[in-house]
Image 1 (tube, one colour):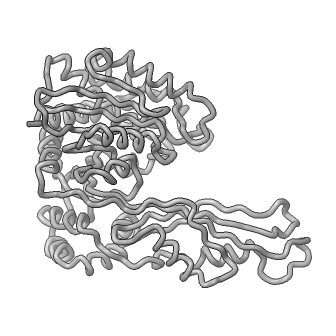
Image 2: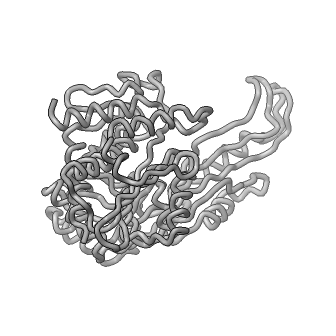
Image 3: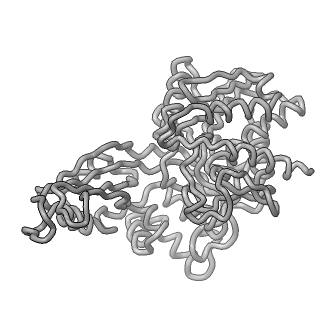
Length: 439
């Protein structure tokens, strides 16, 4: 088999270890995965310092020739649940390799990106290469359940006086047509991420038999509260990273879109309103989003519940906070009989610089692996382990060096996740170029 096929088979083996962190009642899958890494990457485990930080945090140190501040490559090996009954064409944990693709939960999030990072180090070791400065690999086993491993690793490095020069975690990818009327491919490099908050709305009401309801019940109140929380709950605003992204894409835009994008980049207050009006992903780049994700209440079809609740997921734009978002939700609902509880929340991360040598190093590595992809900054809408590093260090970026179509991006946390084998080879080439380019 060729190198692409070999990497695909190794990723298939990783996927077959079902490291589902949500509700995990055993450490066996996570221990099995760490043992698999030792088997698949013998040079890494023989020549790098390896330690377990906390219960699931894997930290590797590749000692460099000089004493410059290190590069940290991050990934996570836990995954979200998947069930074949949800519409998968194959067992999501079979790790099927077919037609030049690898199918299964974690192919993109985040075992594929983990694989290309450790593959690069294994190959460079085989070539006899030594990096100019230390390189760390930080692999967490609980990113999908709030990232205690990454938090512990960041604290451990800080306690040792380690000050990373550059941190790269999952996030953006190589995509086609990143905006309407923008031609070509782009490498979307996340320079920050939105915050995240979980709110619970709850209300009480008179219980009893459903045959004799007496006014609005608990479910009615919660439903009315949720219905008041539309897309306009939060005002649009355009972060600096998004304005910079628009300016980069203006040069590739066609027709009247080119001067329009340049205008929006120069006037962020206008850009925020235009993006919000577009809806979907553009709107999510320009405002805090809110979505009802769970509801509960009632015990039988003919019983009025005395209490009901709904859970909301918020993704918070830079310039706002989790607590501030909760206050705005309370004002929007305008119902003192509905309790709004902030269950958990992380404020948005800072935005890393775009004009410095760290972003340039990533852009150079992108050009080596994907010569036709335009490096562009953007704001990551999801939460990642990177936020635990970004709370301590300024140069933290989010880029998974894989090609992802819109359908593939939709499969993350969804159904039918898969990655191209040749994209794995390019992802490895990205990391090799990044490490070789260190000075």
